[in-house]
Length: 141
Image (cartoon, rainbow, N blue to C red):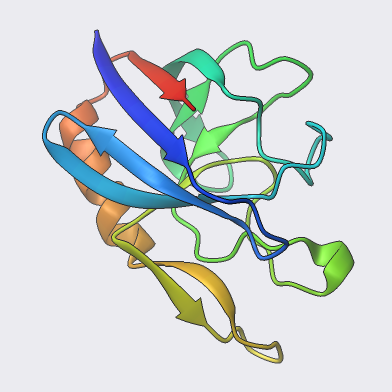
């Protein structure tokens, strides 16, 4: 079984950047800040999960993590922003994981400059080509 490794960096109110690695490829990713595993506002707990291909009504063909404690519908899909909306930051994730080519800053329409995953669709396409629809193991640290 193929393994995806996600290594988180420092959590901020603007999101949690990390490394998104498979085989010899190291991309970046962004997730929500840690908020005690509260659904739709927190990243998921560190751990080892299984992921399977899934046809999301909103995001199309994605991977969904299985058996995440206290959570459901945790997908890997493209997105740029993962900020805490309670602090006025833009967010496009509800507990999911967004791959990115790099981490930088973007200004959302009507918002302020914030941490963002850049070129997320490109990173997602690279990940999906590697994963090839096979079941995955996802290790989050």
